[in-house]
Image 1 (cartoon, rainbow, N blue to C red):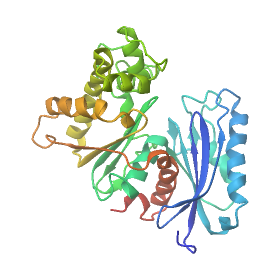
Image 2 (tube, rainbow, N blue to C red):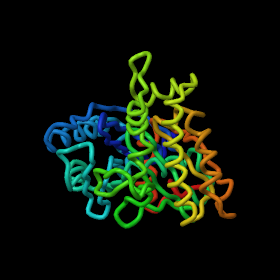
Image 3 (cartoon, one colour):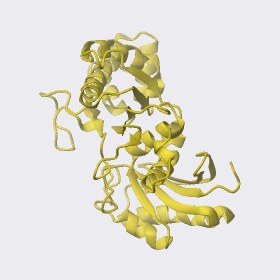
Image 4 (cartoon, one colour):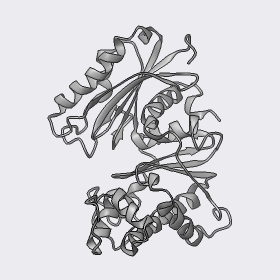
Length: 319
């Protein structure tokens, strides 16, 4: 890391942990990492106290003098215009004034709030698998399904900061109701939770006690037909959502990260098969799908990249 470059203080807020780091504004390298567990079941003020503790640790670093802005990445939905966070998995935060509260702890610094799917997209476009691409869909397929868009070479968060939230595209018109209020949402069919649920409903039982999507993936790699069918159904739903998005906006590449993507060929194999069927028009046929590259760093790098993009720096729009 260039010892003289400006820094972004990045905080990544999820349902299990709140992480922080100082991120180089030129090279995206992370330093001075810290994290605390997310008290997700506690009142909103208790959750914010954990965020404040992470910020306090970063502010105590000598390098803080080079921090020019703060980037917040949060599980969504978010309202980037008003600076509010309402993560589904943090019950105590509903329209929580996150930007205002963080700004009060670091007067004078711009504070930018970004949803976690958009943050992951900003990270992968800046330094990862979508680098140099002008039109990309980046997805997180894990406990839930989220995403973000790069269009025309720039991050496209949308007016509220939630554009690209592909997990709540309906891919099954007669599907089950979704907690979001919709029906047949992609998240309900392709998330890790959905894969494990579908396999168990079909009669699959883990040999080693791991009934999660990771356990289903292990069984699928061993040839278990019920586990393979669960991943095939998830891949079909993903293909439908990806093809619809690509048809609407035209894409150069799709990047998929998150725990389910780490299952490898048991997901990407059937996904390619189903994309051949759903992405049939000439301008979407053969769409490139790549695994994400930044792993667990994507949330922090992306929070910084989105903050730089909002401030007019190259960051997420580099390529």
